Image (tube, rainbow, N blue to C red; front, top):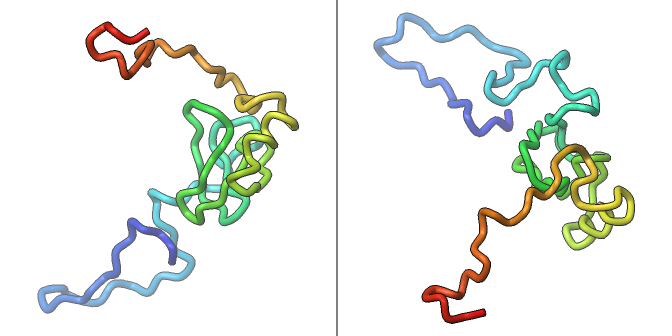
Length: 122
């Protein structure tokens, strides 16, 4: 089992009996049933390296898997070395946001110059 949320059961003296044996069990927080998995148009897709599901809620198409560390393109599902992922997205998909309506919404959340703490730097 590779789930980081599941805990091993330890029988206690106060327990009435041991739990039933489980086979092919998956944590409900980690497992997404096949009928709800991505069909290629959704914002949830499996990592091509290990199958860990990734949900894209914004940003570019570069995904780094939390399960295996693979760098992959959310748009096409291709795996790439970290140093090559942005070149791939630019050349193959015409930009970093090719996988959907996740365009850059400007930099209104950022200061014009983060080093200008007293209004003196231009």
